Every structure is written in structure tokens, then in C-alpha cells.
Length: 416
Image 1 (tube, rainbow, N blue to C red):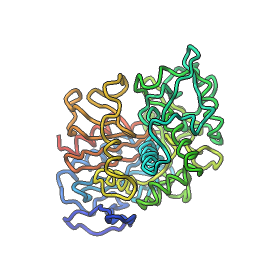
Image 2: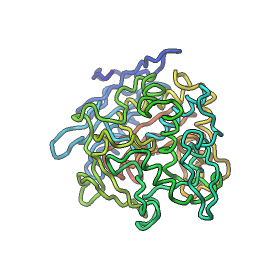
Image 3: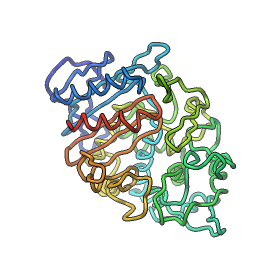
Image 4: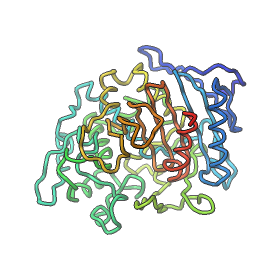
């Protein structure tokens, strides 16, 4: 539940009843953009400054940020606009497009099925998708396993990571962000027609692997991916607003794109350049019931819901996964494989990046921290050594996900 609770100096607990699906969560957001509860005034002051500057400088349009330490909320703020043109502010229950923050949830569902014996990580994907047999450039069709998908070592790619005349564009493979109405079977057919970048298991390369994995989850369960995510993850954790479709459009934040002098309301479709990447968005996709539920980028949700999920993993005290499965998620799962697009010092677990060595990037996070983001403008990280979980959602692509805003939030939390 979300209630304004006054200016008490105590923290708000985020705990799970042992063996229960009922979260004891009380997030002290204020729709006016103030913090109702905090036991760390300096941290609050630093984060307020970061948020105020980003809004004043038109770097982001709206944001919802939650910081939890030792299982309690120490900062919560909703600020800026969910819909700038209509003057609608971001509120505690504003729903954001999660984009790639979908991936950890689908990864957790996969491990839940593994615990039930319905999926084995080294099973070939063709056990459930017999026609998904992409070949290498030499014509050989190697075995792709569930583990390859979970770790982005399957040899797949994203269309936005290749040139405009690349093979994914030529056959119109969807990245899950655009092409409303496209069915998953058709997208998998297109994807399987394109040569793999490299033999599975050889290189870490960010890709559409979790879209493929989402369909494996559905086929292994004989149910739709949204139904299985609700059954395995969001339902048990009472993440009531984290779904693949919109039930209350009035609460969904409008999508904006980076521009000067201020972010612009996205068209449909809308192209955004992020360094050497060209990303196509279709914000209307989430309203189209014929659009396939993208396991990689398709979910929407609130900051409160996502914090519940992160804390469930951090504490190991939850009703969705055994501690052993969470250990698999949160440690290096790719060994020393080449991973040129991961930041130095970071490796990849099963769903997100894992920090092994903070020194190369002077990260204030402790070794063993894990993080990820979403290209609609979101990020999170968990620092287990500091008992810290942080969710920072925005409706601004891509400035909310990477660069100065994200890095300033990190520095403010650690006080550097």
C-alpha cells in the first residue's frame, strides 16, 4: 500500500513474511515530490539536488526513485511530469515502461521453472522451439541451450546494435520495442533466418535472447508468458502493477525522447540515437493485444513493485526462488568470456550485470553488486554488502538510463 505518512524519522520496512506471499511494504511517496520518511537527511538532500537539477536542465521529464537500506525505505520521491503537456505529475503509483528491466523478472521465472524440474538450464532450446535453429555463417546449426539464452551467449544480436542495412533490419526482426501487432512465432521465424554472430558459448553479446527465453518459458508451462510471470514472480510478490499490458492508462507515464532544448514527446514510431545505436520505439505497442509479450523489454510497472522484486532477491527471503537459484542469478555466470560491451570490472549473471572489480571505473559500489537498466529511461542496482537497493525510473529515453543522471544518482546515494 502507498500512503503519505508524515515526517517520521523511522524507516519503512520492506520484508516478506517467511513462507508467505504477502509483502509488508509501505512506501512513503508524496505526489508533491517530497520525502515523507527518511532516516538519512544528507542522502535525501543529495538526491533532491540531483533530481531538481535534472528536471531544471530538461534532462528528464519525470522520475520515481526509491532507496532501501537494511530492509527499510530511506528515500522516496516522485517528481516531474508523467505527462508534461497535460500537466500530470509523476505520483507514487505512476506506471513506467520497464524495457530491459523486464529481463531479470523473466530470468527469475525461468529459474523458478528449473526448480520445478520443468526446465533444465543445459537443455537445448529446440526441446520447446523445434524450428528455432539459426545457423552460423558457414551453414552449421549449433545447439543453443537455455543457459546460453540466460547469459546472452547464444550468438544472437539486437537490431539496434547493427547498421541500418544489417541482416536483422533486412528481415524486419523486432527488438520488442516496436512493430505493434507482431506475433512471437513470426518474430522467432525471422530471427532464426539470420546467421548467428558466433558459436554459442563463445562471447557475451547483448541480444534478443530473453525474448526467445520468454517463449521457452511459455511452451514449457503450456501457458502464456504473462500468465507464467504472474504465477511465478509478480503474483507471489504482490507486484500488482507489473504486467505486459495496460489496465489503467491514466497511470501510465508518457514516453519522451532525448532532444534539445528539452525531451520531446515520442511519436509512434520514434527513432532515438544513443551513441552508435539507433533505437526505434513504438510507445503504443503496450496497448496492442496482438503484440507479442516481449520477454526482453515488454513489461510495465511501478518503482514500488520493482523494489519489492529486488529486495526479494537481495534478502533471499521470498516465495519465488530458493537461495541457491538467487546465488546463480547474482554471481558471474560467463567466467572470463569476452564481453566488450560490458563496462570494465563487470561480468554477467543470470539477468543482470555483476560487479567483480570496482577499480577500473572507480565505482563506489561494493564487489558483488548487481545492476541493469531499461532504454525507456530506467535503472536499478543492488549492493548486498551495503544492504542497499535502489530503483530509479524515468520516462525519458535514454537519458534516464545512462550517463549523467544515472551516475549522479549513484554518487548521491554513496555521498561522493
